[in-house]
Amino acid sequence: MKFFWPTVGEAVWRLVCREHTDLLPVLHAWLGSTGNDPAQIERAGHAVTAMAVGTDGQTLELLHQLVAVPRPQAIEVAARCLSETAQQPATAAMAEHLLQQWSIASAAALRRAVVYACRSELPIEQALQLMHRVMGTLSNDADDVAVAAAVAEALVQRFAASNCADRKTVLDRMRSWAGAEDVTGQLVALTFPVMVGTDLTWFARSMLDSAATAATVVQLTGHALNESAAYGSMRDVLLAWLCGKAGAPGPPPALGVLLNGLVEARQPGFLRWLLAVDRGPEGMPGKERVAALLDEWRGKAPTASTD
Image (cartoon, rainbow, N blue to C red):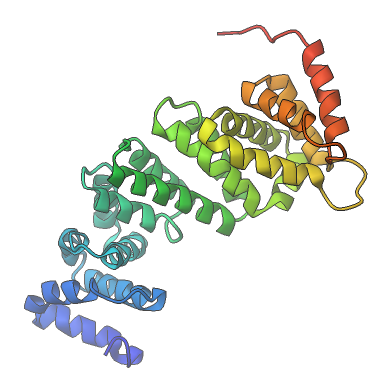
């Protein structure tokens, strides 16, 4: 009824939730076994949300066993329900409790459900806080590697779909995470180059419009270049930016701001990038600019530590 006659679907769910509560666990198990089609998963998530709203949040207790089903779709369905019920007055408090609880759970499937819930519906501050909690649980085992990949994907998705203010919030938060000595710092380094590659035009405009944003981008770029696993992707993004548009005289102005800031920061990963470009083939775009930056680097005394 919910799928094929949506106009009467809500009435059907109210009836089921009021008079056939014995069917609710069965319906959750059935909806968790939906197909791989995103539209089917979305409809199943809406259905689980409808039951949660119809029971004032009581059926949210069934989400744990739904996620326990060894099917990726079940995690997606539970995540959609959590993100939607977190916006409903009747279920928001319980949904928030589950999101906080699951974000530090030992079971990787529960943490993945939280990360999936952060991809679109939740307010940006709430989503970032939850993803940071998940990051704090990560280790190097296989299950946690999958969770880390989900976090990186969610961060890029939120950034790409966000407005200018929310994008700056994402970058500011990532800057504060970059100094972490655990997996969090590595995850920031790996995610940032992908994020820049989604919209170089926005980064260029924002760096010229805001000194604070420029400083954040400089720090995150240096951080990514310093991380060996992220160096290659950050290097390629900078090279693509350095080449600019065919026939354009020199690098874009925003790239000049970035490169000058990186020289001032004197990070080893950026020096590695400068030397790699300087040793590149003749005629490589940006070589003259890089040679000048190297001369500037060599002429500067190291900045004294204030720690």
